[in-house]
View 1 (cartoon, helix red, strand yellow):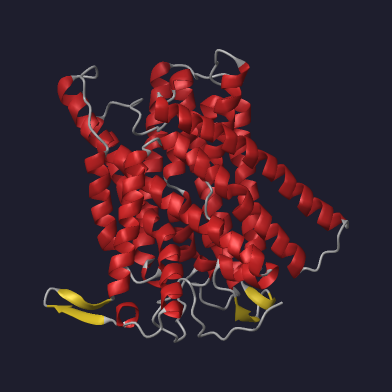
View 2 (spheres, rainbow, N blue to C red):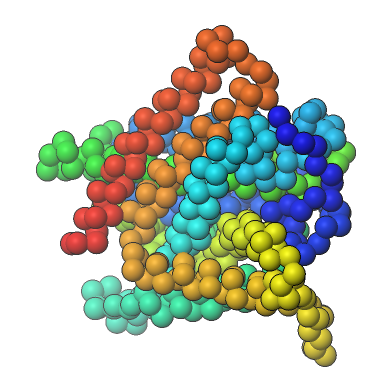
Length: 461
């Protein structure tokens, strides 16, 4: 199927300039932190709105179904990391694209590359939009507290996006995934903090109302077509809430062994997905129970909650800090892929290959590279600029979720499983895997259609 790779082969998430083997020190808890940083993020804030569109039965069930699908996909991918033996290798496939190339060949590798880069890029784009919403929410919360809840408190997204972009220009100079433990830990703590606050505010509002709002059918609409569009978009939002298939192998490549990396990664995935699903259900269900048909598109920035204003501010500050780390979780694979391409294309270029040590009396010494500074800065600038053009939270989440859910979380993992286990056509396992893939494809199609329709409506309203 492919040539065996040595352990010092360049990996998309290792420093592009180095060919030395990397010491892997990750544990199940660092993996959990990476996963939570990647998973709990923009998506959790839209789940109350998604639950409102789907209703009390279909909403929670959809969250649980997507969680189960995510775990199945992750289990398949974890066994693709080492070959020929899934536990002992001895050879490693250190990225999603490496695995697709090895198991499925060059043609699928190229298609996967386009989809994966679009997904990673789109995720960072969504994080810029979400950060601006949270920064603006803090400004509005303080304004409403001073001027009253009916005050005309209005703020633009542009300055907030530029501020977040400026922070990411600095953070993007983190060398690679192996240097991000501290950032992922911080981001994971922040995600728990604002999820707890969102859950607590929703519960408090339900108690204050003295009743549980909402219905089995969800938010009513003027006609069936409008209802279908909203349901389809809600499914896309939920699909976006579990977006880490594309970085499973990269996270797994940071883990030490023994025990075998796939066992550690599977354990970390169960813990992380269980925790996130618990928070998703709490935020989604209590948000819908609190506001019913008036559930905002973003639970903490849509101003269902005005008081206590300081707690709303704290929650949004936690979101912003989490998104700083989340942006890097999805941006680092793109940086490493592009930089590796430049190194292979221009092996003698000083601009690409030279590193310069920067020493300062107040900070530890660090190395800078002209290519990394220019490319990563341009990348952050591009996501910031596009976010300014399409600052539509729920619609963007739905489109991104629909685009990446089936190909990355379902199709490629299923096809790799079939090749890896040498499953014959029309056997029971083959039919089960293909049926699983087909059903998920149908979900992706309807979610994509609904989200595109919602994005067009938001743009031209």
